[in-house]
Image 1 (cartoon, one colour):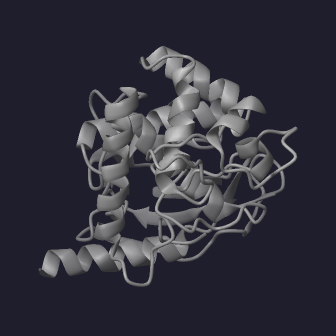
Image 2 (cartoon, one colour):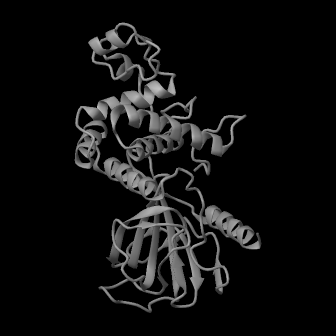
Image 3 (cartoon, one colour):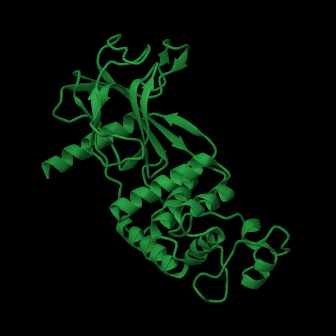
Length: 316
């Protein structure tokens, strides 16, 4: 999994790209009245789909939304490279002229973003109708849920630069971990270990590692008390074997790096409340969604990176 969120031009900084993207979101918002944070959420979702799949080409611009040529020009259009907005519309293509230059270019960021926004406009600009439009486009509940979660995060923080991470437990705590992803596991049937175990004392605070939204909170007979957080990069962060949850924590709540969400424990492998069948530790896993499915990948390199970055921030 790539660490960068999107393709960055050789002569552009991440800050430049954020600025260019926000400028386009606000410009299309003025034309369509679709709030910028929904446009940002759709675009960010598509950026991350491109990063996790090989069947979609890299983006040449700052907008990540991808349309197949036949979607853009219209399935029955004899010219798959058509840039005439009128003929594209005649063949029911999605392509539109967003910048007023008289052409609907599949290579133009503003045309691409406006075309998706124009599609959503068929349904409406309020929360519920945007959800309907997204479902009709993606035909997948999880995709719609991820996008709406991103929109909520962007609306809450008001900006795009949300790449900071924190280590799951305080650096000053007595903790240890090593790469255990892929190891064999016997509990609950033969399977691989889909995460990294961080051993620490019982009750040591467990912290959110990223900006995100809580998708799941509750009990699992293997994971015990557990929390699932979705970040803006389509990653699902899974915290298991907790001793309990932070006060007033709820599904749908927005979190940020370093926010306490629970405590290290030894819960799991039994009915709700079962604990103590193994030493206290945090099971930390990461899962990536690619628009079709979700799979686990090794969090260990990320944990090492986040620990190092946090130590550097503390020194500063």
